[in-house]
Image 1 (tube, helix red, strand yellow):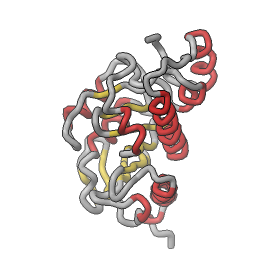
Image 2 (cartoon, one colour; image 1 turned 90 degrees about the horizontal axis):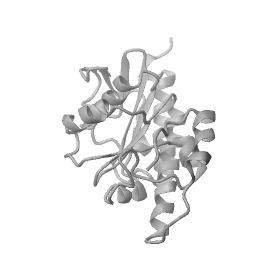
Image 3 (cartoon, helix red, strand yellow; image 1 turned 135 degrees about the vertical axis):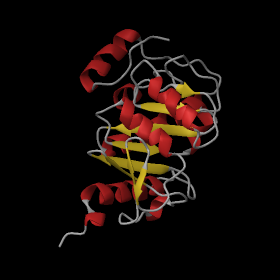
Length: 219
């Protein structure tokens, strides 16, 4: 008999955690992942090391954030449920404390709709505009409510002085976007005070259309 605690969404989440940890994007027990299956959300429990996620021991929540089963969820669960509620197509959420994206979250935002400018086509294609959410203590439900209510599209955000949270239509897309966000953050920091050439609106538009990426406004 198949064990429901070893279902594909659960094992996919565990594999994603191991991959992100192997890339060095989840130091210690930082970061949390979730995957949505119908009206249920499987989320890494509090204090989980992403390199050792047990697919049979995940927290189970509904879209309102009610704890249905499993161990105590990560205190960051409001971010996950907020992303699922604001975007019905989201099937996975990745929240990390990855070094370069966390560093960029400590800097002033490039613009109102995106903390990071359009430095590369891959940032536009795989991530898109990434707003900076004002600082709040980890697990603060008000920050999640603000993210849910923002009136423009996005699939990634930076939490001020904290780190990135990224949603995707699949776990693989969410992971890919989180990795790309870390890479463009590293590039931005490497540029320092130098003024880089940014992609123009004319260069961004066809990429956003082709890849369904949220980039709706200029700086």
